[in-house]
Image (cartoon, rainbow, N blue to C red; front, side, top):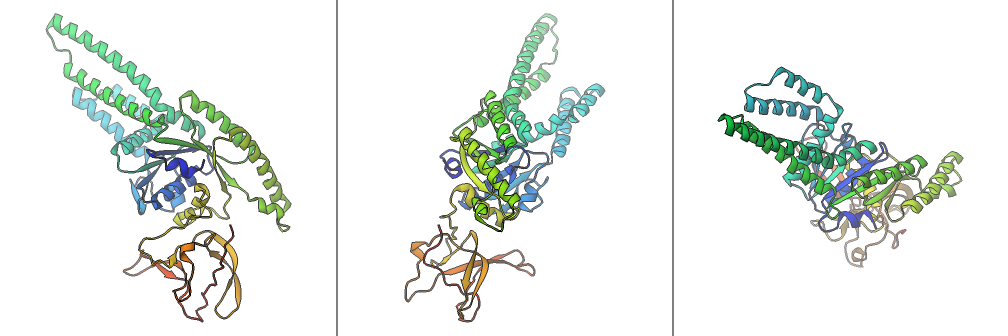
Length: 422
């Protein structure tokens, strides 16, 4: 099964990418979000890691800016956990003041010390995650999870806090019963309004946690992907993670093998032996991965020739992730029928109008689209190049212009081969 098959299942809405730090979770989260947005789905990608990297991947300042639109249907969110914790402190103080008139000094000291705990950042992120989902403004929610152990604790937070809240609610109800007896005996109100307010607040927290626990454990609506690289330590960590997630009733939907060197390097005489040794090591570890997790592997993503940053580079990588390397051609419905956007960078020889040839890094389709074959007497197939205005009143606007202007001496003409490599 491919990643594309899982994310496009009917009812699927929540996609979580987990794994150790530095293996490509953020890049794959962003890539999947880019793919779904290009399919016309409204998508938001959200980082749960305090050291979020979505800003780096998209090359756009997202930190603390709320829900930022990056492209059509594509949004991203990086929360400022410290600011959320400060807002939470102020909210707690206000609630206590509303109920009791003031905040006792010892309670205020407790609020300050509790907010300094590392778990508060996770709680703030978790709360923001719940609010984002409950708003229901998107078709897909993609979460770039914090590294390994933190992710396990984070995802188990809903069930653990639910148990704790249940106990607190039970204690509070028992306290209400005692208050009722005191009231009947003494005729005095021991704080019925305050008690009711606290119980309602606890019940609201319990409902939110139950909602989140249902989402995390929902196999029809939620998919958890684990990212691994073909190295021994990463393989062992993946085995441990699978066992840990299962303790909390969370099952992996798939494993993505990332940063795979192409086997073709072994056939190239110019490739250093050091690099060939790395390729052979990876191939041996990939065999181990297939033996251990055969039914879980949904994608093998190649090592890129450059760091995948920015929307353009993410387009390149998504072909490997979705399993559409050879077929996927993105179209604009408003384009003429003889025009097609071409992706997949490939070094190949081109032929100019004057008969001379040159070798260049070009963006060409992998195989010919039968419906776009050039027929005698019709306009030839045009390859489109995107240009962005850098200055003036049109700054930021994106135009698409043909690589070939039709001039015999333009120098940008291409003779498109009838068959493309598969």
